[in-house]
Amino acid sequence: MTMNTLYSLGSAGDALGTLLLAVIGMSFYAVLLMLSAWYARVTQWQPPAGNQNNDWILRQRIGISLGGIALIVCIAGASIWQVAWQVRLLTIFQAALLAAAGASDMQRFHLPLPITLLGAGLAVLTLFLAPVPPFYLFFGVVWVLVVIVLHALVSKGSMQLGDHIATVWIALAAPANGLLAIALGDAANVIFARIKGLKGRKVAAAGAWLLFATALTATPPYFLLFNGEAQTFLDNQSPQPVPLIDPTPGPFPRINRGVSAKKLTPNEVITATLLLTLANDAGDHTASVAFVDTHAGRVKAAKEEASQVSGLAQLAHSIAPSSTLQITLSNLADALNTFDLEAIRNNSQQLADERVYLTGEIGKDGRTSRN
Image (cartoon, one colour):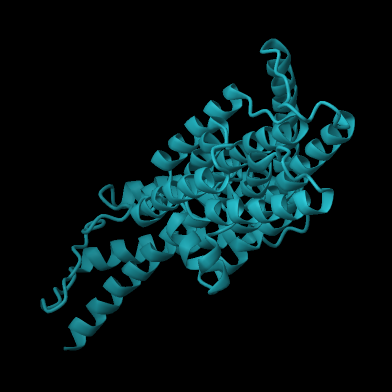
């Protein structure tokens, strides 16, 4: 019951969190658009031959608008599919870079080198920080090589180096969904070229790829999403809490399977009972925060309960200095004080594990006594 009520703590903050992500993402996107425009002026970029008569104002509006829409889709996906804020921010920064580069290509057939290099560097950094399975990296390497070769053959050499660099960047940013983004982008380019009668004229191929990649950056791999296995993948990708319980927590050694149960001494029974009481009290204090109606009220209540849980941590340390319960309670108090929802959930789960362990130790002693 405690964990169920704790998960409801995040519901009121979801809308605010999504709004904050939108503000951060769109602000970064605006800065990157200005950077790409400045870079085009500094490098004196000229559009490919045969495109000088385009309506550049219209292309600019379309490019910026499509980039913004794709970024909003990504922000919504991050709010739905991602929990950890560090993962959300990395995703949104990467999506803003992809959107800005895509918008620039749509506007003026230009992929700004600084944005491309920054995006590729961020993608590599994210791969190091996130526990991405080797299979997905291998999958990304294979399809990016195949796609580059196919594009080079089909376009008969008209593909520019920047287009191939963009393909690699998309693969690094989205090892699985990048392939879908490029397929959708190619389909959109073909449809657009036929509708507009652009035979023999250059199309902003990489721009469409990058915009679709922007929209899909926060989405689980498409084949898992279609098979209903997305949540399992996300659970594996989410940062896992560091276990706080040692193999032999507190003064009570764990009993391995197949080993006869050791009867606790009277002092150990008293110690375990006291620790279990403290753990239950801490759970009640934490759960009470969820029953406050307003977000501001929950933040205030969490700070008040943090001092109570901190006091329980001190008591646990004085009762059993070697027990990990005092560490769990101390971490939970810190999480409540800062109203870190993810840390509150993780430490509450750890507290629940502590309670199960202590209850088992006390119950084991009763069974041993009866035997």
